[in-house]
Length: 197
Image 1 (cartoon, rainbow, N blue to C red):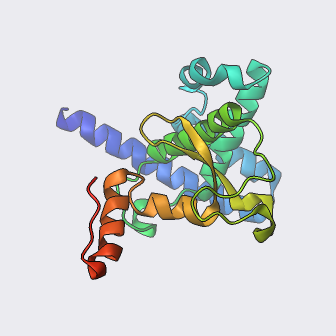
Image 2 (image 1 turned 30 degrees about the horizontal axis):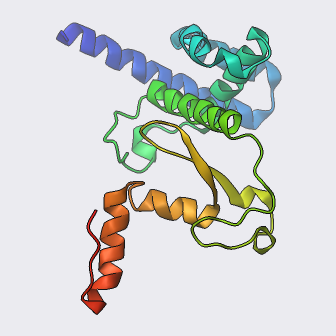
């Protein structure tokens, strides 16, 4: 990439950041005209529908109509606009990303559509089902939000329903057999036992 192109991208990103922060401040005023003006400024720099068709071609089957998809897509965009923070105001990314708005937006879209696909593939959870890891019964959990659709991070395929705690535990151990095996070996070490992956 040439230096001129890098400088131009850098300037666009800087202008976008300024516009987004202006938009976020406008939300605090509740002034609809100001909010609309600031939103339009952001959209001039980063048109929200620019890549919508690519996403629609992948996930259209989850929606009743193109209009429903577009409405959901714009809601995600607005939510990201409201919550995005410049790289200097948030913790360092574990992916060593650049902190650009477009990456944050793409991540939010992926998260949304993966969850919709999981829900579509999984159907309804059996309310009498126990968590397959901790074996706690549904009565143990105060609300249905404590249940999570678990998916394979590589294939994106639905694996089953887990309680929130077990789902987070698997994720914190790397969501793979190697991470779980290391944890198990750690616990078994005191007994001079090991399990191979």
